[in-house]
View 1: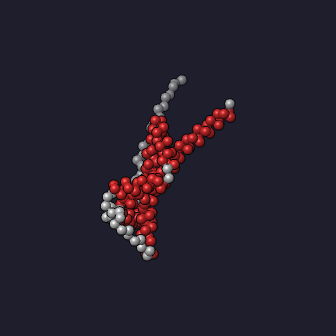
View 2: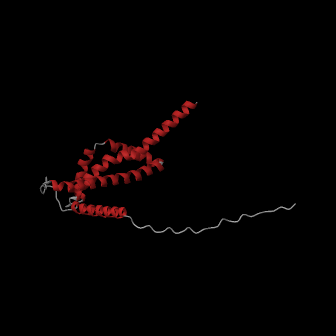
View 3: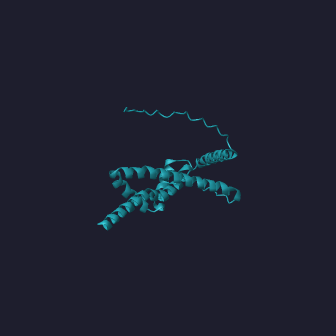
Length: 181
């Protein structure tokens, strides 16, 4: 009786077949064109935001011409998306910091909770002076106040959502252990 040992051979290593390069479809060109157009519009709006301006030099009249409405809507939309981007960035940074550091959580969560309780209009009235002084001689200060108001309307709630989920999870665990006992 002989003992035979068989050593398995490694499977063939096949080089993956290169996939044929797909051609761009018409929808790809459409998406590219829309993307380039949005970037061009955003750059134009940014240029209009930084025009020279000093407070008290006279209020520029807002045109009621229906042809100007898309322009005003685009500027408002840009402000909203800038505020949303700042809120998401703030939420990700502060939320992660508070979630990963017990010491930071003890400071940041109460601070954000207090800031959430302050009305937006109270913060805006304080920050108008700061932003106008920061961007002296430019309309960008007034635009920054608008973006900050949008930021404060969203950021606190977005940041505290993680804490609320954690609190609910902790409460659920305590309820579960209480029932089991």
